[in-house]
Amino acid sequence: MDIRSLRLFVLASETLNISAAGRTLGMAPAVASTRIAKLEHLLGAELLHRSTRKISLSSEGQDFLPYAREMIAQEEAALAALGQGQTKISGTLRFAAPSTFAQIYIAPLLPKFMDAYPDLTLDMHLSDAQFDLIEGSYDLALRNAVLENSSLTARKLADDTRVLCASPAYVAQYGAPSDPDDLKSHRVIAFRDLEPRHLISQDGAQAAFDPKQAAHRLILNDGMTQKRATLDGAGLSVNSRWLVHQELENGTLLHVLSDYTFTEQPGLWLIYPKSNVVSAKVRVFMDFLIEHIGRSPAWAER
Image (tube, rainbow, N blue to C red; front, side):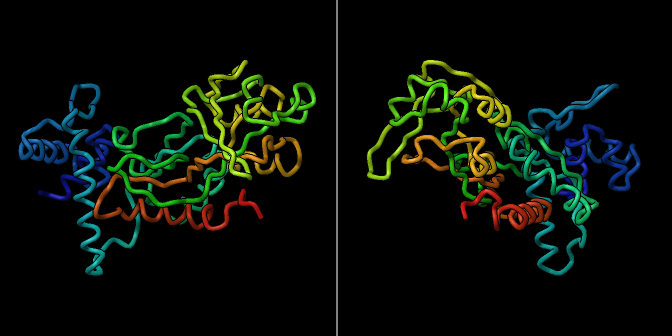
């Protein structure tokens, strides 16, 4: 199968413009259209829906896209093994990450990464809501969760310790819980889909914290907004230490129920579709994040 045609298809699926994808690869628009048509004829499927105004990825194209990327990655790896690989990293890297973490830790690093890889386009999708890596056709994603999908591979970026927080003003008005059972009578700030969490004390006593059983709940789908509401005294909230470590140090937030820890402590994972070969663009971005964030996390307890 012609690798240049595969590269053209991948670029066209990302830009939704066959002519623009062709120009990137040094092809005239007519040549690019012919190559896509030949690839579709070879596969026996329409990969891109075309109209006079726009193109879109077909369901068959969506299914074929990860395989096309895999074949391109295999070729790059084979050439690199022979010392014939490209010296520059190029193309488009589609990366998804929690919006709150990206704002604090990734965004400040982007100028340095872009200077290091000027031929690479970084297409970032930022949201604190859950997303599907495969359906979204992302090359790489950051998740602060437990890895469950067996079709994915992961590299750990850092630990992700969770703590229960409240502001001094909230504690002054409503008191601090002394036992996990007390949480039912408190105001709780949480994500809509937050599952019950299990706690364990220093002496081994176990308990559960279910936000849905709280007397008053404030549901917010953005981590930064949750922290802001907690700082303003709206209630208790479960936070990643990377988000609140400075507030815990300066006293604007208090660690409540500090004798208890959450038994489930998900890490920060860089995840990507399972493959025999990791493309160069994915590898360099993972290495960059691990070098600048993961090796010595700013939030690590000293």
